[in-house]
Length: 309
Ligand code: UD2
Image (cartoon, rainbow, N blue to C red; front, side, top):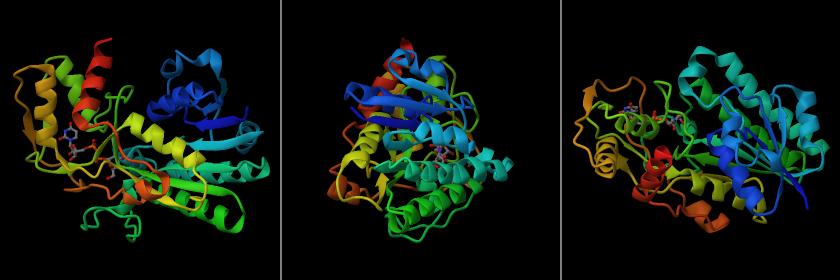
C-alpha cells in the first residue's frame, strides 16, 4: 500500500477527497494548518489517517509530510479573492511559495505525481466563453496571480525536474462543508444557510449573471483521475460542468427544494464580479475520462439534506 498526501485535507474539498481516498483503500496523510480547515470535517475518519498540523509555508514540515508519498493532492491555500486583496504577500507566500515547497519536497521524496488545485480565476474577465485552457490567462487578483504562478511552477517541475504534475482549474465548487459564514463565501453556501433559517438571501445585480457550479464529489473524482491517469503529466484541465446557470435560477431552484415562499432581496452588483463564466471541460473528458456526473439539482438536494442532519 502506498501513501498519498492531501494538503488542506481538513478543508471543504480536501476532507471529501480524504474520505474517497480512504474508501479506495489508500493510506492517507493530511497536512493542514487548520487556518480555515476544521478537524470536525475529518471527524468520521480521523482514526484512519495520519494528521500533521502545519503549514505548507514551513519547508521542514512539508519535507516530513512528503516522505514516502506516492501522490500529493495539493489543496492547501488561501482560497479567497478578497482576502488576497487585503493580504497579497501572505497569499503569495501560502499559495505560491507553499506550492514550491511542496514540489521541492515531492521531488526529494521521489513522489510520482503532484496534483494542484487551481482556479478559473486565472482567466480573469477575458470575455470569451466558454473558458478553455489554451486561453491567455488574465489574472485580476493576487489570488489568481498566486495560483497561476503555482501552475507555472508545476509545469516547470514537470518539464525540467522530472516530477509529474497535473493542474486542475476548478469552476464554482459547491457541496456539504462549504463554509457560509463570510460575506465572500460561495453563493450556494450562503443561499442555503439563509433559506434554512427562513431568511431572504440577497442577489447582487439582476441575477442574470451566470456561473458553472460543479459538485464537490465530481471535483474529488477529477483529483483521483488526475492522480492516477497515465500520460497526463504536465496537463492543465478545466473542471466544470459546461452548464451556465444564472444566480436567479439558482435561487429559484433552491427555493423549490426548500418548498418556501421567500422572495430574494436585490442589491447592486458586486464590483469586480465577472458577468458570465463557464467551462469547456472537453480536455478533461478526453484525457482524464472525467465528466461531471452530478446535476445542479441533485447536488443541491444532497447539500440541503446534509444541512438538516
Ligand atoms: C468564484 C470563487 C473565487 C474565484 C472566482 C473566479 C467561490 C466561493 N469563489 O467567485 O474564489 O475563484 O470564482 O472567478 O467559489 N452572489 C449573490 N449573492 C450572494 C453571494 C454571491 O448574488 O450572497 C453572486 C455574486 O455576485 C456572483 C455569483 O453569485 O455573481 C457567484 O458568487 P461567488 O462568490 O459564489 O463566486 P465567484 O464566481 O464570484
